[in-house]
Image 1 (tube, rainbow, N blue to C red):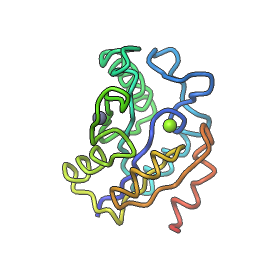
Image 2: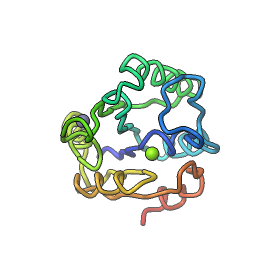
Image 3: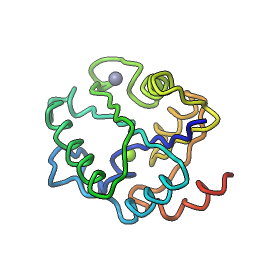
Image 4: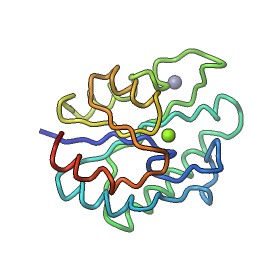
Length: 164
Ligand SMILES: [Mg+2]
Ligand SMILES: [Zn+2]
């Protein structure tokens, strides 16, 4: 059975302090401990999927192309350390402009990933840094672990590796 970690992006993977939106590759900086934690989790058999709200697209602050550039940087950083990322899903909408089911706390993106990759809810965990992430996890029927924004994932490694 596939073990999957769903990861929020900003504040979990990369440092978002001082930024409301991150859409320039130069502003995309991995959080401390991220690579080390991911390497250990990969060794333990976890696979990784990113689920991110990118409402700045709907706001017109940046474009899908900007998001793709940031994701290319992320994937190339991961490639450098031989960590593979199964997929990246993001919602380009914003509730101020249009309703959608994919923006967290909506669980559509998680559910799409679960269907596409045949992921069992019992063997998936969502790591996020805010209420919307936790609610999305709950809506998808998977366990959520909330960290503080930009907290090192090293601090929750034992919880992830030894089960609850
Ligand atoms: Mg976040
Ligand atoms: Zn959406």
